Image 1 (tube, rainbow over the protein chains, first blue to last red):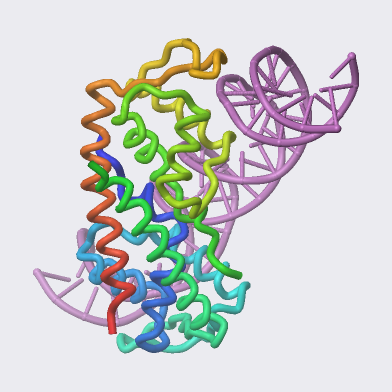
Image 2: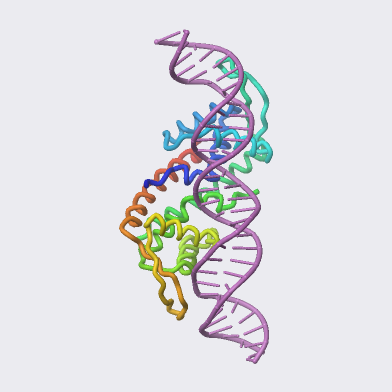
Length: 110
Length: 110
DNA sequence: TCATATGCTTAGACTCTCTAGGCATAGACG
DNA sequence: CGTCTATGCCTAGAGAGTCTAAGCATATGA
């Protein structure tokens, strides 16, 4: 019964998406691949989680979307960070650091 | 819209409970207070999350429970770690370290 | 021709947390 | 004596985020 990394994913997926978009506008599929690469395939980014997350974030105005074309000539929905999104990423990063260090510190106790 | 620490809690509560019980058998209320103290009140441990978590863990045989009496003379349900629970904690600790360092590393990028 | 990779969408299930209520008693304080 | 707070446990239902699994479309390579 090894702990599934996905158990921990709650809340961090949106932050990872925001972080990905600081590299420039990108579309869902590429965002997922970039994250998986960045975390060294520690866990998969499922489409059923990714796209709903993007819709939530668009609704919250953290990102804006428009249809475009990928390098491979496919129709893609391009997302880009808004100022709100940038602020949120900064806030999330601080919150994550506080949370993760708190947990890590407890688990490291004698 | 600051990120609520609870967004990140998923999956870690059980691990924190296991960790708490390495200090010896304890009851729910005290476990909650110990965790809150250990994390410096970074977030509250709600009873509506704590007790269901303890039941899940008992079902998974990570802990065993028996009724006893607290130092204050109250009827309490004492939980103690099983060998399974100890193994789970070790596994969880490794999984958490892998996950949290992966996320932290991504967020620290350029 | 067929498989694979690229891409987006979404319904329903699952799981975990929270809210919010209930119940019970000990001790402090007026 | 009455009341308030802290100590304790239980649980139904809501809310939120993830996953499974399906559908749809097309480019590319074998």
